[in-house]
Length: 268
Image 1 (cartoon, rainbow, N blue to C red):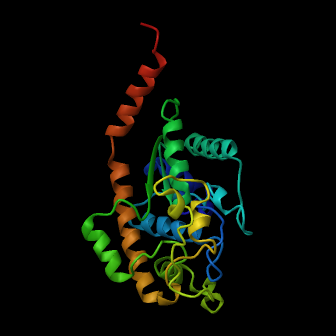
Image 2: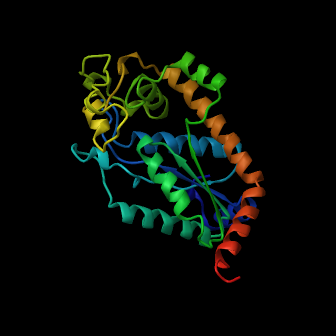
Image 3: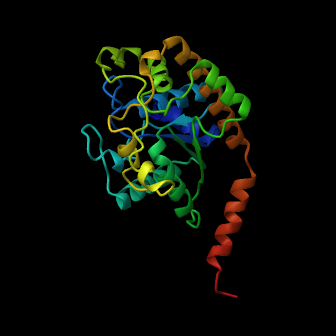
């Protein structure tokens, strides 16, 4: 159920019956020349909406204000100050909680959000709020068998505007894929400009150093048939996550214990 599609009575019923809201986390950024700037949001929102048909819950509109500072050298991205990014997402979660939802899932569709969301999850641990927060990357933490299945359908070659992501977009919104604009010689390999100099040492320019055109692998190998299979796989995977969250009683209990102990630190 999409939040923005519900009328008032439907919204109230969903809050009462399901108690779970998903925020599809994304950004606006360049995906080579052939994929739309909103690729991440379009994909993760589609997965969330379809998964909610299997395991009912409410899906918030795509949230495009994640972490994307590494794209500051190219146009099309929208970059927010880091402190504002935390405050904005925190306020949104509080508003969803104020509306009656007791569980919120941050469903991430952008690799650059991982560090941001890991920090965000820890930064709200000691806040006394009426909801429990969960986080998952839609394509992460797969079993060896699940990874093997994905590879058999369409191998991931860097995961950014490559044949895997292009195939997904062909399934989500084929009219937005413009393969005729992909003119970068393939396969598009990691330039490794900081890795060659620094080894395992990381910098904030590593993505730019590796893939300055924001595209990896071999996009021309993509197919809609593969994309449909991948999309179906991720939808079912997220539906299982939703089911587990809806049935979870352990985390809310631990949250209350943690908050009460945090309130009493130094009092005994």
